[in-house]
Length: 385
Image (cartoon, rainbow, N blue to C red; front, side):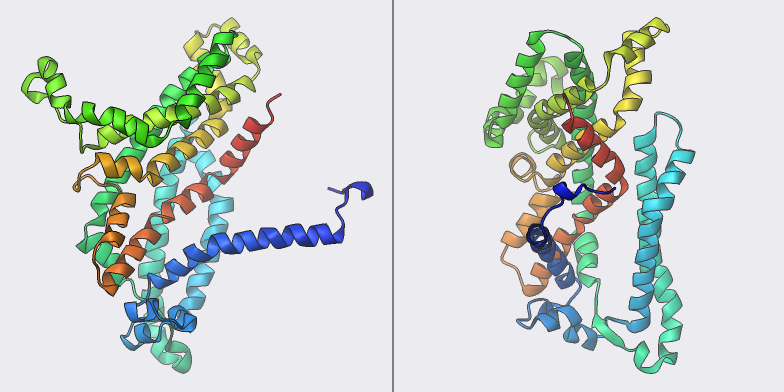
């Protein structure tokens, strides 16, 4: 789209703005990229003062762990092919095979299957294909980049990080499911109420959201510790102790997140013309049927955006999970903090780095898969007026 001459930015402003944007991207991406490189090296290479040793890993190669030129080329080509598929082919397949009204579930299944296939291709297929060819290529078949997955194997298998991952998925799934269920119904009701009370309820919700998390934890903690005594008159000997259990964390995180979710979804609902509700009612739908069959299909970008914020809150939380969960039910973030805080060897520190890199992968996949819905949802929520 052409820009009027009077609206064009001067060259120095373009250079300055692009320079600041490039610097910000570099500063934001460098730590993640660097620890990802460190996680695939032996401790001697990972903590080497020479950055080239960290990148190329001579000590890692000397132990027989590395990638050849052929394997690097095959991996880059496969990565490019998978990204193109994820951006162009995967959305069409999900839209074609997912039943109406189950878009989020279809995307979840597609993302899991796509990720599983990608792991098999990288870790099984490429080594199986390039392994017999490397001895035939001479210098091109020698390792030029040190790489080992032993730290990931130690974290996920030996340290049973899979259990922490499962706990994180349980907490995150519970928070997202409850927040979106309550948030959509409450947001729809407040957006269609037409009274000043709705406005003041949203203001109170934002004030509640602004409270420090430690205040809510301090308020809930005595109740969770004494939950068995409180519930014994109702449930008898089956009364549970909530302290240390994932359900306690879900309750607190939903309390923290729910005001923001209701506010965001209410803003989205206000952007949807009320004439849609009226038309559905004229056609014979009840209020709930109009909400489910007419309004929600239009609202999916907003729901996905609110769900992403709920996911990030629960997935990245440290304070609440570290205070309310015991060692067995610990989620990934406090578990990794515990790895770094312990008296450890260099190998243990690299394993902690590998665990930290591992938890970023679902976030990249999530944003990559839902990028269109997130952008459209943020745009829709920003143009209210």
